[in-house]
Length: 261
Ligand code: PEP
Image 1: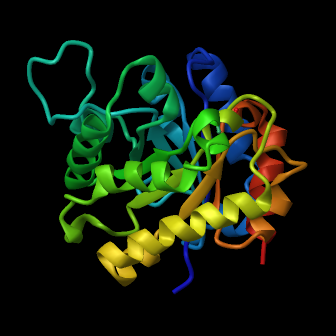
Image 2: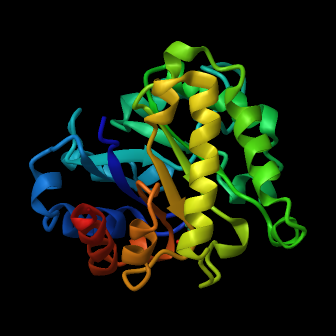
């Protein structure tokens, strides 16, 4: 089976509603053909702030072409959890899914592996898509422990997940923390090696349903490095931060993902 290739823009804590609407309009207006036609093999998503999700709703349809993600989701369905936004609320506002376990959530907001695991479970069970982020910090990479660290994050997030929730709605993103927003990128070879390792774990635990998951790379992806990363093999697209805030840069990356063999 051909894995779905994704390009997803993480807008982080940027853009007021009007600017979010303008950026979504520019992106949706120039999507390359297989995406614009709603093809299943190449997909594009954006992740605005919670309060801007509604502003981009006019382009949101159940089957795209533009998929809408929140940048996080609560670890429980509903209840007395001040400040949290649950999966049903996201569906209600038109979101297709959520990013879960981004390193900025883990580092700045103390999100633990256990919380990430609950969020993945709750969101998938509620019918959302999940972009599960894993990735190592610089010291871990320099100590040569990056593979075991990233696999332990993946295992913590997924090993208790019921197998029936492992479907195309689960997307994994490998994002080395030292490459996020720094201008440094993993070499295509290093990215491919980690993706290979992640896929092997997914296959071992979930069989073909695990092996077929889209695994995205994230960390200073730009139009000038996207082609080489795609060519490395085992990279099924990108989670893009900074470059996703400019329509043309983001669309160039989308085009490179679409045209990758
Ligand atoms: C991200 O935050 O997911 C990300 C990859 O950011 P950047 O592209 O800016 O490194």
